Image (cartoon, rainbow, N blue to C red; front, side, top):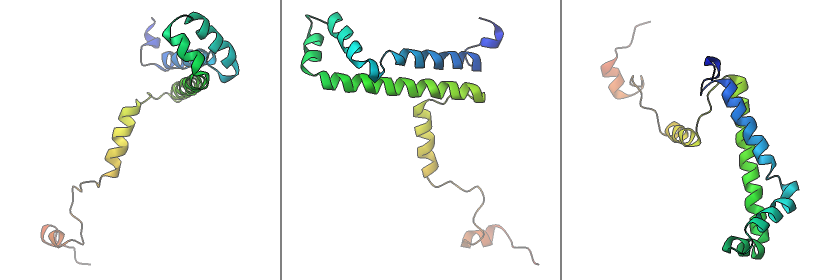
Length: 125
């Protein structure tokens, strides 16, 4: 792999995003009858085939959800590659969002607090 296409480079990130989008195209809801038929024929005679036959709506919902998640992830990766930023994993975003909701610890005391008047003398105007 060339030096310009290292694992965190925008070129590789965009390629990963495009692979996610094109892979998700196979699960697109407009192809749902074909997708379910292929999965049903491959899983015929197994427990998975029986579940697919008995719960076709649930299987369709799962395939559609997979398409939505894969397409969204692909567009997210392409968008980050075009911006030149590194995509942040979801768990890191959630952790940061949780930290943002906590009150920040001030490094300097508030000027209106009683401790502030003792710690920081006010300047005379």
